[in-house]
Length: 236
Image (cartoon, helix red, strand yellow):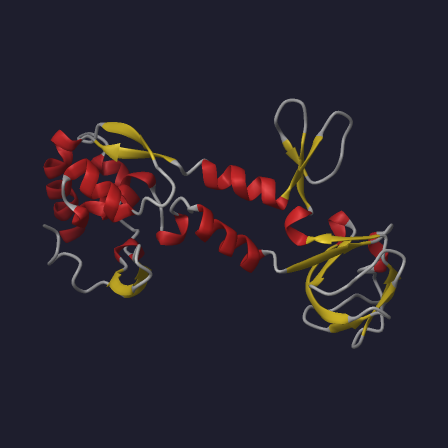
């Protein structure tokens, strides 16, 4: 079912439960299809993913056919496997990769970027305690993202290329840095207001990942009809 339809699609790597990597077709690339055209025949249910449940496992449990894992991406509008709910091990690796360093904060953002000078992405920075490289500039939060080292409060950090420097007000893991502030009504802000709650990068990522745990699935009694219609639309 649908095998011929996907034979010309690009290939991507996919990690199996046993750790082995296989190559599969990246059918998500052909995103020009109007998925809403299927709404007239699709009736959804919801499925709560367990930790470690891959798309093919869910498809096998729900439809008795692991090859139908692509329908889960179709109805949830996931673009690739990185959009799928991450199990604990995958999530931890994702966090370590996305937030590999520390945030060094300062009182004023002008110490990071000004009209005349600024720290440069990738430049080497150093202090008496160690050295690293600039990963990101975030003047909105008065902070500089740098590769991990033994940075300490009250030490002075200096850019090797820019020559810019500041006294470190605090040094924390990037994953623990502020992602945004949430006010009493649940609205997000990139600045603190009275009554708002600070949400860290890690908290934001956990919340975002948990939102993907409860996915839509096509009702099993309709799956054949939906696949046939999808093939028809993709063939046009």
